[in-house]
Length: 317
Image (cartoon, rainbow, N blue to C red; front, side):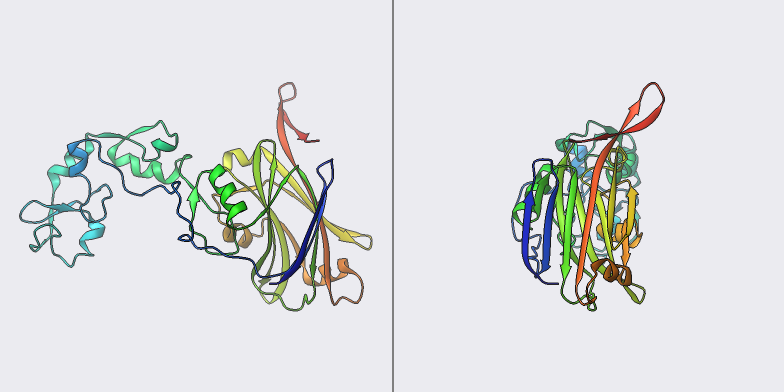
């Protein structure tokens, strides 16, 4: 999609208006910029026992079944299929020998989470550690940018800088927004992101997506919000989106989804404001040959009322 110009005017109350015409977004690959926030899948061995449990091929920790050759060299089950039944250490035929002794040793170990350097304090039995790490709240986040297959991962401060510097995403402070989306030929709809804007409010970051895509045979426009943090934190916030004109309006209210959920997963679940093309053209007015949508919205924090035991909205000023 093409955007000819971007104009953003901010006012003192945090409400701003942005007009967008299509241009080609700049896309960046994961190799375009080296950084130190990517967490290696390898677990550094802390003791000689840990070294024994490290696969010599992939350097990851080994889990049952642990295989060995006739000379006692071990490797993980995943790598066994990759080395064509040859021991990577002595080149002897592997066969189907299990190293049951090493598997028993592993049962007695307790190890820190591999994300301990990112703040996780937990220690787990060897065979429970892998399950925890798949859901660890300290594990890195994927880049939330939807306009490219970006493989960058990191913590939230790093990803905010990455979005601003590498993807040139607009950054705004405030919890209210007022966007005007313009497309010269709404009859041509392709799966593409029109815009990603990052908002900083309540000390947190939120990603506002707006895009066009095909829903079945019909083209639609969709706006939704994602929270830059975990799902439990996201539930502390709510947001609303509104679009309308000519005496009609559509309103969406919901909870922002965590960026742990991919952009595609949120979009395909239709968890946001969806505008059918005919309705979008009606809102645009005129001769229906140009799309002009004004989407407004706000973010608020749900606060627990200790007296009533219910949540009450906390609106930022």
